[in-house]
Image (cartoon, rainbow, N blue to C red; front, top):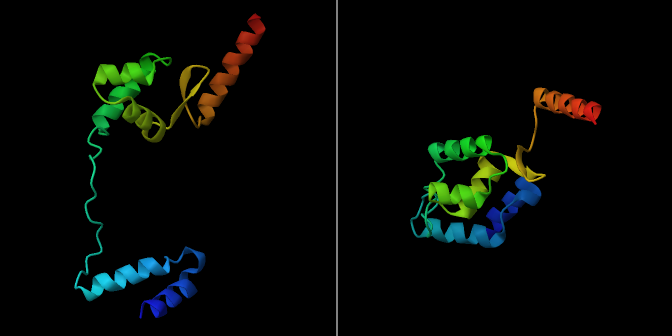
Length: 125
């Protein structure tokens, strides 16, 4: 039975089909009467630190001082340095460039403003 199901899934989904071992596991679960489609809770500590309030606090600290380090932010907020780095990269979508935190993707206005600033600096020099 798992072979037929896997064959149908492979025909339908192609390279995105689940592995035969996964299908076999699902069939065994269904035979045991487990029809749950939700993931079981996993061990480990939940990411309770990644809240909108913490994200906003980190963003404000970065806007105040673009050269601030994740270690300093972690010490000020009392959370791990790894979590701060993750929030900066994943939630705020920023990266370090010339020792400053900058957005990964600049919008058209930001690009224009930076070009104008650079041109003004070039004229001064």
